[in-house]
Length: 165
Image (tube, rainbow, N blue to C red):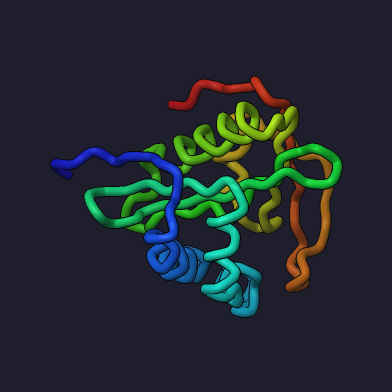
């Protein structure tokens, strides 16, 4: 590649790239479920801008291009909800997703006092499930997304960092 992937906090200047990347990355999830109305595909640019302003949002950059992102926020029960993890399809499988997760977890624990992390993914999303389990998440239940997709809920305690290959 010639350049290093840099993980950093997202800024308002990243919002449009995050929005476009999210739309690209979640096409494969939509196809997996035959549902192109899943939440990441119908989210508005204004909503992404608000999340970048309010939540803990990290991006992975390759030069000037945002090639990955993740978001996290503290929920009413004090856990950190992590979501919208995505990495450009051409760069998946290189550990960028795991690095983004670690950055979000660290910031949520250190800056916002999270003691537990929670995320969810579609029940057919084997690649996502493999990554989450590899970095220490365990299945704690199921739910149904607002879009009707059956979801698997995973959690891990803060400080439960697992080495990634």
